[in-house]
Image (cartoon, rainbow, N blue to C red):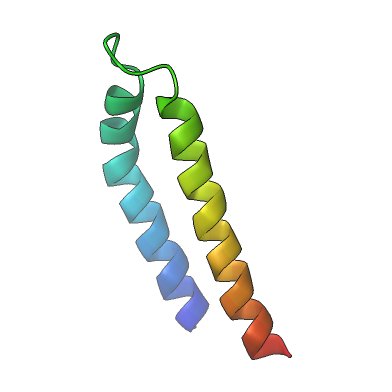
Length: 58
């Protein structure tokens, strides 16, 4: 049941934050590297989650 609460929290968080992030991402005066920076942060977060999950599964 704990996983379902986490999934529900993520869905609500995405619902609230994605419009704000898209507006920030697509600003015409933005730096050319902003989308790459966002992807780098997302990949880093996924890597950290995988590291923590791997330690618990071992």
